[in-house]
Length: 264
Length: 264
Image 1 (cartoon, chains in turn red, cyan):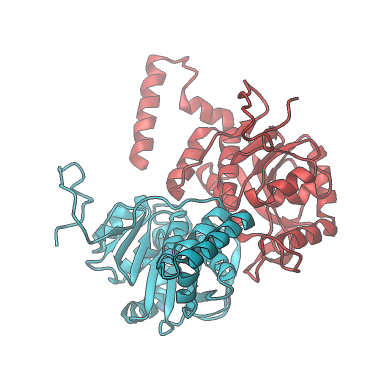
Image 2 (cartoon, helix red, strand yellow):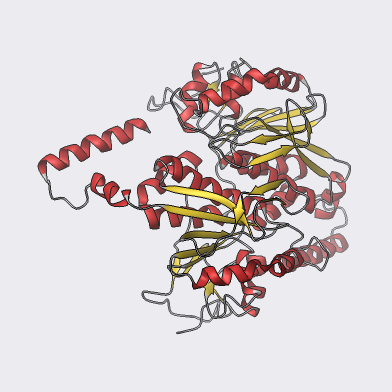
């Protein structure tokens, strides 16, 4: 990897001698991003899904490493610093601070880990409902109204917001199991691994799509080189096209009418 | 998903009426696996990589859910029950018990999270060296000698074992960054996402390959249906062929001589 970067740097040096005004100069891009600091808050609540949290956490932590600290990431909860148990009697993680909806940056909302359906205490619908009742969605409403914040959801995280009406008429995705519920809760469901409703609301599908959500945001905020370096380190390649409500829409042949977003 | 299972069950029922002796009957397979209990120990050490641990953890926890408890999984450490910090100042996880190399089942050894190279305290080589010096590799040597145990490594986990000579002449893989070091430490390196040296030693490549290692072991021990259900729940598909020292070997055209395993 060092070798590749070495080659890139030599190439850059050569370019800067030959074409001093080249706008595709990687060194220039690096300078451009130099002023940008991005703080990421990842939300914990009782019964959260471990991988929904640790996937994005590790992507942003690697971005912190590769940018020399331009990205910072912390675990937060609605209640402040506390130890929070994950779902299915899984391991706990410690929230370091209270979720601050006024702080600019990215806020990631994970889903729950539990029985995929049913009405038991350890069912995902019940865990999400309990999380909603902690005041978390009230804070997330403030975050969604803050123009300096991008809200990102993973898996059931979009269901959690939708349960309090926060995704009404917004384009979003969740785990395929939860798509009918998400639609019932008023969101415009889109079958894609990552959906960008607008620059400030990005949702991901099932569990591992949290990696894709985080890698997409790293690319969007810091450019492709950091995202690519993380992909190589993790031996993971982001999949699929990030869906956005723009460009030419495909003709609808009626085969997937239930899932196609309504015409605007 | 319920619908698919419902369809499967109806199909099974139909099959059992029409072809009562069919050996491909899913219900029969389920009965076959009914006696099998699998305990998984995932090892923590100071500076472990969070995703190397949580990826396999969540796969085995989902297997526990889908089998109604035939699989059990716990976090362990060489020292016993304690809170263990992950690398790069990341979150801690609590080991619930001491690593028991005498207990049958699967033991997963993760890699470290830190600077990919260099000699600083937070470099991956230094973190692994410190983990080796805790007595962890002594316990893992006992595990490797226990015929009832499958040892699985993720990312730098194979380097950790190799540092104490435990992978001498064994087929293994690690993160692509660590492959030259793994070869220097005496392992026969193989470029594959998952490498099975034999039934009792399975290694994975970089970070996210831990998902593939765990899904492969779930399939190997419990059959494809549990592994497939987990893949759908996580929206993740295992990639690549699990490399084993069997079958026809490809002709070597000299282009990748450095990485091809030696002829036996």
